[in-house]
Image (cartoon, rainbow, N blue to C red; front, side):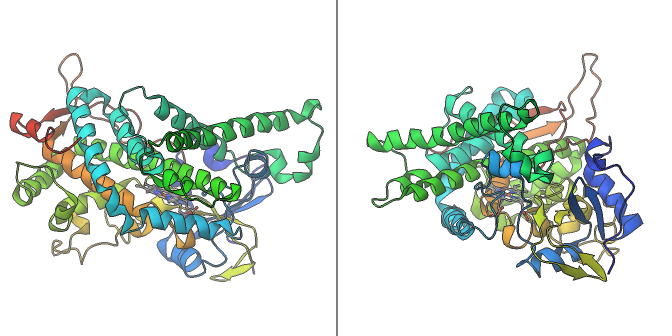
Length: 483
Ligand code: HEM
């Protein structure tokens, strides 16, 4: 059988998706027109398979999840910098995999997440108050909202100030992990593992000295929040959290504590930027679509009223707001290329050979912009997710949440928290504020460009907007509830 088709004539070091000015997900999506739903290319010694349709993604990553759920190995990032034990990179064959997923489920499964609703509601009110006080800095407030929730859940720490030391610490870990994880597979030693045995003093071994530094930083940053929790426990003033419950168990081994460290870090790392990216995309799309904003607001006024903020029990009665959230996730998926998987056995698909060890990249953006499934795909249109569509369309289009959170055994374990956080933040923002175009110094309206940055988590590029309270009365809502 032949390999999936794809561009073959690039030099070995040329990385087409990264070096192009076109965004990688758009370029990959264009491959679909040339090569079909499954394409492939070689990068250094890695064989990369790009999946561009929902059918192929489900057929392989869901229906054959037994062999499509590993992560690509990287000697540099995994072994030398010690990211191999992080949730995102952990091999499915590692016995810890089941433990991590189980612990996540216990803390953030569909039932467990209810225990965090009060934290989420409190952080939502803080975020709204910050928006009111300093609307131009909406990006910063959104990031703080997302981070505060996961720091509280993971470590019990409440973020109280703008320049919080703890947030700085965890952010430093995030930046470190994000930048290093992005380089996995790109180092020479990933293709030629014997290089890891080079003596450190050799001039050509600078990468090993760099890995040593990064490993040291990684260990320190991972341990710091946990040490804070240990001190709190020792002083008898711990606040219940994932880490405090795990560290308070009477019989624990060093292995147990190591697991706690990595799972707590993954709660933060998985939840910090993802929700923030979705919320910033929401603000951008609201600036551009006042009529959609207005319709959602009318629904909120009708169902919730104007004398309280929406709560999670309102969600089932707000079909248009839910459709709007789905459309935000579809229009620009938070992780357009998901997180790469790896196939652990030779396989065949649709007459093609899928070699064992191939890296599998699913283009979620392409799936959610498939014109045959989401007609007029570049139009931001929540209507497509409603069942009472206009005559020309049949039924609601497939729920984007089936794809944006990934696939098979690696599907995002933070999905339930993400859904509640997004609902509360989006519905409350709409209930309290009007989001519109900013004006320049001459009073002209500024229309933001719809542009997104590369990255595992992809953020909207910087843009300006105006965020103003709908009325004086709604401002009182921000002072309701316990803080
Ligand atoms: C809008 C919000 C979010 C989106 C779109 C999202 C998306 C994703 C995607 C695409 C993956 C990769 C799945 C795959 O490999 O097939 C993933 C993995 C993961 N996510 Fe999320 N996520 C979100 C929020 C969260 C939150 C709030 C948390 C934690 C509280 C979280 C924790 C994780 C973890 C730990 C993994 C790794 C799972 C594994 O490798 O087995 N995510 N997420």
